[in-house]
Image 1 (cartoon, one colour):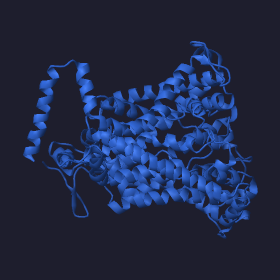
Image 2 (cartoon, helix red, strand yellow):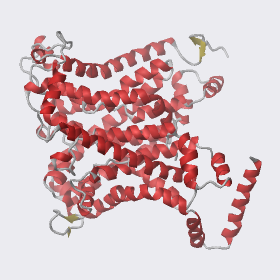
Image 3 (cartoon, chains in turn orange, red):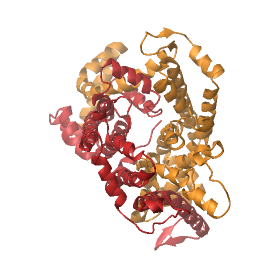
Image 4 (tube, chains in turn brown, purple):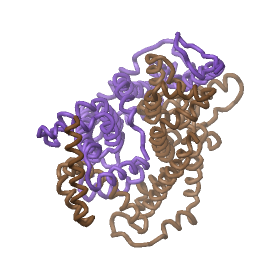
Length: 321
Length: 291
């Protein structure tokens, strides 16, 4: 053991000495040559990642400055697409509004639900905890099980909601629910929350289980008086990395929530009541083939997601203070 | 300190009030009911005969349970234009090939990023973390153009190859390796003359079993649930999920078969999760993001 450490230390020493005699570029080049295997191992994944994730982002930014229909070569427009989006496209303004309402409500709520439920079930016995975890997690992995909500809130009298309300004499005509601009958004938010206890939830459960009992004992000695103080001063600071990871997933989930809405409320939804940026993107990219314009939408969505991540990162750094 | 200590099953519990416990139990019960009842209702709907599905007032429970909906589902499958086995083959092939490639590429890259040190490493991992911050909707159009340039549109490749570069799997694997594969073990293997590939495959991989199980499940689930894709036009190349959504889309008479299909499609991932839950939770233990 100690011999190995010595060898390792000697190796670092050698680097330190030889590094002084070289420029930064020369040293980097030497390091790169001596780590060929490392690059070889990371290369296949990185190549795929580059071609199907990094390059598309760069390509979208470039295309968003052009007019392009996939047949003729792209024509450079500079910022015209963005100007058109904000000044000339009322539906896009609706989409931004809906996306923000949706993200601001479902993002934090789903995050808090994941955190508090994970925290509450943390003290249950392992068997019961596994069962409860399954019940809360199941909706998020159950394929298209969310379609059950369109049976419960169907627009005829055979759905549970309408059937019961009519049977009790509270309404005379069936409510259109997902096809009524008054209810559509609320219902979609409820379904989104029902689906939201996903990977972040599991990450929180694991994070809580990894906290050693001795922290809590020490905290009790130091004068922590109740479970809320314990949460804020002990638990949350220790699991900050998980909080960060969970936030990333909550943000992408709440900004990118479109497919479920389409399945429940149709495409487009009535009066564009739940029309989000994702739908606008599908409409211009998938249906109309206005690739340049659609790319501008994609770039804005991208910017919103990254912006939200930076904001939340700042907020989370205040945890436990 | 004059603190009153509460005990739960002979265990001393600090900082827990009875009122708080009651409140939490109440909240969990309400949430549990909200989460569970819709799941239960899917199963109930699948067991309802046609006259009960279209009954007024609707019932939450089933009076005469029947398996007819499941039989209808399978006979509808037999009627499809492309033999149903073809859809099943497509889905199994895509899921297995995509998951296998993702496992191989991501774990190799994860080992390199977690356990070796070289210029550019941190930058690459930073890009991967950044990629978790947006969804693939954002890159959809540009990816489609890339696919057409590669002539991959309407081939299996368009679905399988991008799955190799699935970043959440790499992220979880790298984080897990960092905490669970000790550097000393690798160092002594290197001193014994082991190559880096040997250290990765024979030493590191067996130590991160929960992580690759989690990666397999996440990757497989994503591919298994893939429905209609904009990259695939040919009926012969479409997936099970797409085929099922097609048969169940038709009208009142198929409402029962549709509920049965939802139950079947929901059961597979849930059963897989039940079996692998402890491994997934163990992997998530190191999922945190450091600054």
